[in-house]
Length: 260
Ligand code: KIV
Image (spheres, rainbow, N blue to C red):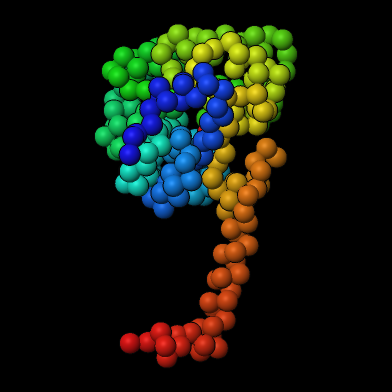
């Protein structure tokens, strides 16, 4: 098995091959995504909302992120595993490096952090100690006060292009573009040589990422419009739980065949 690296992803962009990334928070999901050939697995801080039941991603702690990163890393995926640095874990360059190293010790192959110009020193410092960094611009859930489309004005679009270039110069190997106007995401993607990974940012990004629970229909809250649903696991689980309860209550489970 040849481990995929940031270089692999850059080459995919150069060859015009789209990158299909997904989030994972546990061992089995990571195994299955890897078996499907997904090249980039993000242990996203979306963990807080889709697994841990928080209202937003801001409550997620380093300890929680490391716990789930370890679970994903135990699957030993060929895919690159990126640990998402949670809110307040990269306030200074020193703190950013310390926490990025903890993600690497937990088995990640790199880290992601939110922000453009404001986090360049942190990106440089992490890259400086040899840890691959994935940038994240556009909608930034850790600091956003409302969820709206990014890059609508000329100035906002120009700031996104500038931030993407600055992240590339600082050594980031790729940039997530979240909820960016599609034409602006295209311009950003054409302005840099590292891959852009879009979420709600149109078809012209170099890759796409979805929160696995959203695409699997494994989330009881509101799922965003951009998340195409490939399965309805909530329905499958509801049916299974109801059938099991009925079988126990009617004594059809366990059957004598299933008893020792
Ligand atoms: O936390 C997460 O899952 C993310 C993706 C939406 C990119 O940051």
